[in-house]
Amino acid sequence: MEKMKCKMLMILGLLMALSWMTGCNQCGRHQQEVVRIPNERFFSGMKPYLQQGYEVLMVPKGRSMLPTIQDNADLVTLKAPDKVSVGDVVLAEIDTGHYVMHRIMKIHGDQVVLKGDHNKGVEHTTLHQIVAKMVDLQPGMGQEQSVRQAFTADEKAHYRVNPNIRLDSLRHEEVILVDTVVKRVDMQHLLAFNEAAKLIWKGVSHESFTLTDMVDILMQNYEVETAVAQKDCAQLLVNWAQYGLVETMDRGAIHP
Image (cartoon, rainbow, N blue to C red; front, top):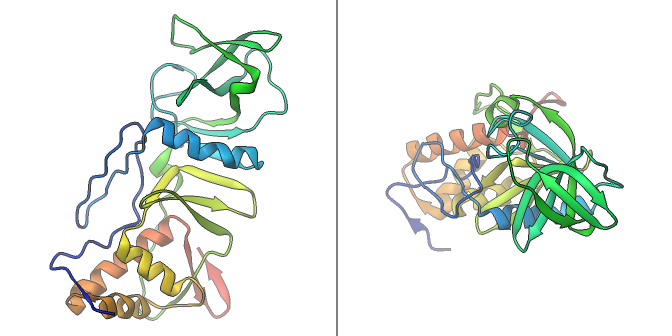
């Protein structure tokens, strides 16, 4: 395979998505990126998991549910509901591609009236259009507070991909973390894998690996200086570990 030429190789492709309200990606080397997913794409990507019985974690954005749910700060758990009642906070598709997470005010037959706690107006929907119900609310636990953990890449250590985690594609480079053991989907941390990161992930995902293995895969496919490859792979490994995608193997023990 001919090596790909890149003077400023951007392999830091595993980055947290802090927003899903607009549709553009900002890319940069060695900086925290934001992956922005359109509203309809975000929620339509969530629906299949809810229908399969998965819990979905997300950080709501907007002020319509103040003071109950704080904008871009609180961690919410959603599940497909067996039944709903007046007072429940639900996620509903009130029009094609238009979702709201508001409280049920009235139920009359199949007709449902919703209202944000901070809103004056109401929305009308049906029981069939209710996608999920909020089953847990953790104030202030959104995003960075709930994921980052101390980790340092070690050249001598052996690592493996977390066997409980599956990465599903949302669109283009974006992926979703799916915990297949507890049946939980983490949509508060949408991640982006660029081509270099995908290449490395594919090369190490079936066996134990070292930081040197990652560097070798990168240098076999890209024209990049050794020092640059080592630095970028170390940072990529740190990112992966901090999001629980890889684990350290040490004398048979696994350390997150």
